[in-house]
Length: 116
Image (cartoon, rainbow, N blue to C red; front, side, top):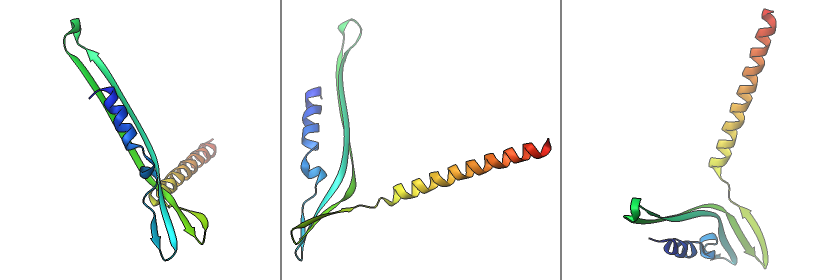
């Protein structure tokens, strides 16, 4: 696989239908799902000592997360964001940890002042 193959794969992978799903029509309402897509890639070529042996390499990675959907009803478009429960839980855990560290620090300071 050479660098041109990686670029070709990247072009094929990053299309509008990756970000926007097929529209869904139900009872006069059209829903167009949307995702946040990120990707990266790279490639390279190398030679061994004294020009012996060559190597080509490359790779591509994509991640996609649901971001929401466009809802079309009676000619009006509204955005309905997706709820990422995992991100909410992680944010709550970080907040609890920071509050716990702040409380432990305060308790440590109070004990030092009482001993003096």
